[in-house]
Amino acid sequence: MREFLIIGSKARTEKFSLNDLPGAGRIDILCRCVSSAFFLSHDIRRDVNVYLLLLGPPDPPKVLKIVGKEVKYMPPDERGIAGLIRKALEIKADKNWKKSTPGIYVAKKGLEELLDEVASDVYYLREDGEDIRKLKDNNALFVLGDHEGVPEELEEIVLRKAKKIIGIPTKSLMAEHCITIVHYELDRKQLNS
Amino acid sequence: MREFLIIGSKARTEKFSLNDLPGAGRIDILCRCVSSAFFLSHDIRRDVNVYLLLLGPPDPPKVLKIVGKEVKYMPPDERGIAGLIRKALEIKADKNWKKSTPGIYVAKKGLEELLDEVASDVYYLREDGEDIRKLKDNNALFVLGDHEGVPEELEEIVLRKAKKIIGIPTKSLMAEHCITIVHYELDRKQLNS
Image (cartoon, rainbow over all chains, first blue to last red; front, side, top):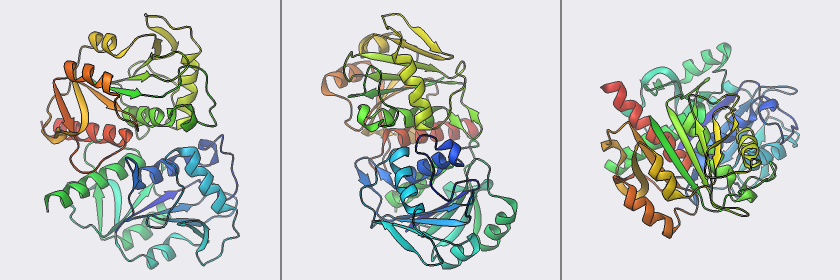
């Protein structure tokens, strides 16, 4: 099981316009991360879960959970994914996961509570981390920030929970591209094992 | 110089709705390819060019050329990039490159003519190709198909022009993810050289 948690530091926690995803606290980034995490050519990775931690106004924090083995009717384009996120945000969220559409759940919880409930080893993906190519763990949750990175007070929590800091040593990349590369390196390990 | 040519087998060649990019012959795929080709975290790869060959109705073929070292005001989100593509398609295109916005050009030409004018070595990116990890050429144009792959009659041209068929041996991936991985592998080569 591979899992990704993307922290949307300004991502809106209520209805937003599908015509301006960047203006909704960079929901566009989260959509591209979802697309990178799940989509293969004409297929979906069923062994993946994605968590989106939304920290923007008006009602932070909220978490969306997208479960690869359950998800249906999810297209790979930003607007299509944003539509599913928006639908999930219409639900009155509380501490318990509530189902929005197949495979998509929403809850009102923060980072620490979320990390406490995941079973995978936690890895923090940050530029200065250990080369991803050395990682062998295929039962992992990767924590990524958006364009603003992980806010300092949350980074403390991530560092406390993380087994290791992992990095991509080439360039400073956008979150969605990091996800593609994590998949690629771990897929190669599986191919060679 | 790294260059990417993405063949949009059904991509519209005239005005389309920004609210339905998949319905415009999968312009959404081309937009994600552009985003993957150019964007770093808070930066743009200036040593990259992208060609989009649009083969959908009503006026195929058309080619858009996006020149990394000239491009300005390009956002990384699908809708933002689609807006620039749509703007370029408003121009009455002929055989010569006409500038739409900074770094974005449009012309009325087909695949063979386009490949004849590029200076880079041509590589065809196809699932069964030689492992990308073995590639050392950093002066390369990579040809990719969209969700339908490269149409048969065009594939003949690509095979004739291509130095080699290159592949990503892990999974069957979407075009935009292939671009991310091409960059990543070539970046690693540069890092180690």
